[in-house]
Image (cartoon, rainbow, N blue to C red; front, side, top):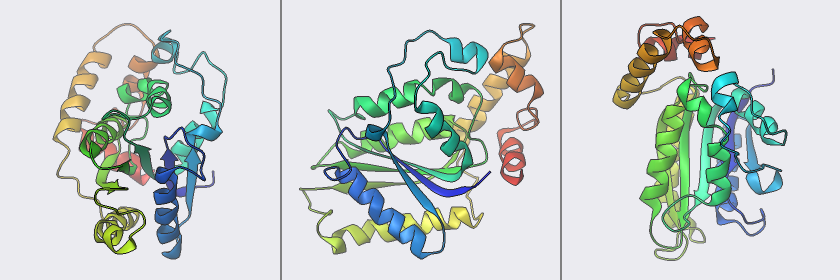
Length: 240
């Protein structure tokens, strides 16, 4: 399996030539590659990802009832060491294209599918609403099992950051450094209170049932999820 050091998923409806989120992602990609790591950008607008049906099949079987391009992106995410969600602000939330993408992966949050990886996010807006996006990205990425390292927030107009590199570099340098530290296995494992609570809750819920379905089988049989704590599970999966 060819490993991807950094995978950036751009959740914007715009084409790559017109997307500010993509432009920022390309800048990040250049920085990462200059340091000797490989980085790939996935623009959701380039893929056929149909709307979630809400059929719940994924929670029961671990498989989606829809056959489309989502499987391609899921494979890339599983190969990546660090995952970045990048999206613009739409009415103080993520765009529909990003929300549907995450809806299709909702079952991953019950089994910490990306346990052992690190993550971060990029939020882009004209002037405001950035914290809503950063907080949502962080919540989802942590529920996926990753250790969230940082969130980059970029304004296009007020103040102008995208076209004024000095303004951008003020926040970008530290953001890139945090990603690189994560790739070097310098990961802060002290701020995981929410994940500890979720891990304990799910372990109790899914191992106490006599029913065998995707979620319960993962918690009963997966070597990482069988560990006694989130921290032990994360460390185990990261070393695999």
